[in-house]
Image 1 (tube, each protein chain N blue to C red):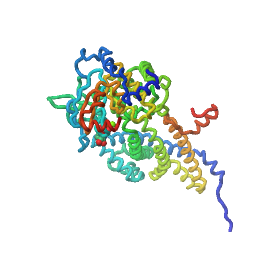
Image 2 (image 1 turned 90 degrees about the horizontal axis):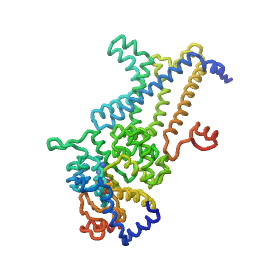
Image 3 (image 1 turned 135 degrees about the vertical axis):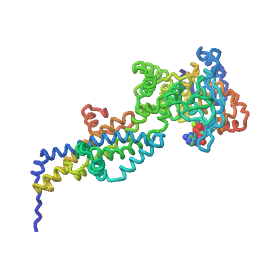
Image 4 (image 1 turned 90 degrees about the vertical axis):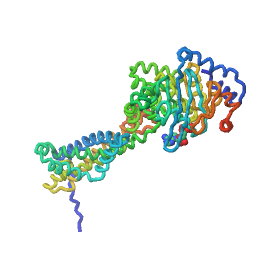
Length: 295
Length: 251
Ligand SMILES: Nc1ncnc2c1ncn2[C@@H]1O[C@H](COP(=O)(O)OP(=O)(O)O)[C@@H](O)[C@H]1O
Ligand SMILES: [Mg+2]
């Protein structure tokens, strides 16, 4: 992992719009690194959302979202507050029911099964089984406060996958080491900084060996000096070929790891493209307006 | 005019460990503890029904709380001890339903109504994000409840439960109305004979205070144990003693 200072310096360079030639190469190489994520071996996209609609009462929050995410691809989602970004992620792992449309993860319909051409909600254990393959990292971390860092990481493998404690702990320690928290294994969340808590949350999600990771503004609740350590972890996952959807307004990070950025507004995908293109030449007025506010 | 204070401390010390008093104190303690156990079980179950999506379960639980919080415990005790046997007119039921058992059941069901509200509030006090996180890891609703929500709810539930328990421990004295010889009734039976009214009331008061004190200390220990993972854990009698003996703060 690059040093803290180096990361900050690099982020600032990127934010200034200065040339960092290396970063454009990163996504291309990381997608091809692991064979099981090689699109040529399994042509099916990891995620397919087809005309997804979601409403809360009268408010239509998602108004026909259609998007694919390929294996090993990192997609960044940006958009103003209230545009439906969190709702989209919550629909993908069925924390919310859909009003219409289909979501497939790794070829499997999430939350529903099809019978006689109609969609029927899955049984609870079946929903849980499908969710287990989709990791989610929340803006406010949502660590379990009554469990240590390691306790947080091993809970789901032990309860859901019935992994024996010893094995779960061994793998949990490995994951905590991977996010740079070997020293904090036995600490409770209340004694960790925001950045450390979010890294534990990432390790906790990884412990279930997800096929797809969803990040909902993982750094928005962090003090600026802690943002880098969390983004570094996400970057290292990208380099390992993890398929990810990251809602974030860290545009420097987006340019570095994502091949594609999606701009959402009021429940629609307004436009998408490479992060660099989207930033330098947005096609829509709304995108331009939004970018001018966050950059 | 002289003011003679007729109070004999010697009577107090003599009756403090009198076998009749001691028996009454045990009955009070047993009724309260067993009723509390029933109350917690009922409260946990009805709270889950109350927050479930099933409308029938919700209404059923709501009705339970409404009725048992809305009528006096003494009335409920009378219904159980006098009313139900009349209704069924069954000899074995009448024989089996002793005063002692009737008191435990009536106080347990009554306590359950209050516990339902306490547990429900405890569950609702846990952030929604906790359930989201647990579900996103593939836990079922039940697993998330058991492993994530309830352990956190417990912290919020313990203080009001302690209050409820202490209130009920004292309220068991109303079971004297069906003739159960609990602590207060035992002391009344004695002073009815020896006329040392004030002395025997003091004896009963000492026992009530002793029980409440012991449970308050236990409650503080439990609260400290459940505050694991919190930045600030409450100090308790034992934690201070251990800190002094070990020469360090906290356990
Ligand atoms: N559980 C809910 N009930 C009602 N409205 C909601 C709920 N969750 C989100 N919303 C509304 O849906 C809209 C989109 O929310 P969200 O997906 O959180 O947006 P974003 O993450 O892009 O800021 C907002 O207007 C929000 O108020
Ligand atoms: Mg959001």
